[in-house]
Image (cartoon, rainbow, N blue to C red):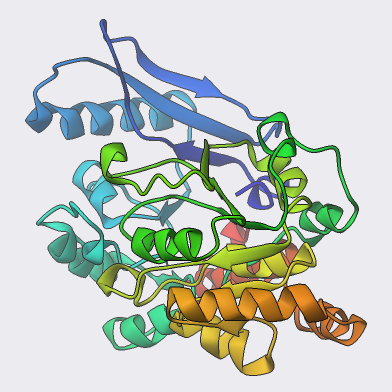
Length: 352
């Protein structure tokens, strides 16, 4: 969205914030003049059936007040149809990043709303090839866009940085992961690794979501450091010996294409992952990522890496594989596809 804001105005309609009093729609600009975040502030306890009516009213008032008549609707979730179904965009994009219906506590009407969104969308983008295969027959214009990266940002981790305070005192070796800790994460697997090698430290960076913290494994060598700002991730990465991706193999991970795979590799870290399809097909088959299934296999592969290290040849292959992987390239390809669609609708004057 930052890249689109370089050529057009972008308004990101955020999740509601609930407060003691209703205050309306708050507009903020996170460092980009053309990018605005619209955050509805609603009264705590408002009737759930009224929420979407309020969101719809706030959105239409904003469009009218700002004279916005020609616009693209960009959806990350079909649930947004509940308050945007009467919009009249020149183009509708469904950016399908995950199979949300497979997630824990997914709304019962999500699948139905996605079917409606497929009917309304002009273009569908998917966040990986597995997801593309799952959606390609549901719409005539589906395009795969696997996870991109800010390479320069994560390559900073190749240079040893000052350790973050909550990590600097941990001994080596360190295995690290950052990301949301939810039903997609295999806590039993990590617990097994920790107990097999109690002298290894496992660093987990990220929020705990939809999981009872009391149920988490608590060996002394597993460290839950919580959510960190994006800008600080390279400093955590630089202090890890090996990056791990211990994803559970279940419905919620069947179609994921983890952004952290190329980010870990750009940081120059050896990566060990469970057998996620897009990781195996995009990285494992080229020997860029090690694929393991059990705690014993993870430990064995970690020990091999600790002895042999990673070669210059491996790092060269990593850099070659990631050479064309960037958000700039993704944005440029998406923009071209969108402009082609506008031309087909005889609306070239609205080119993005």
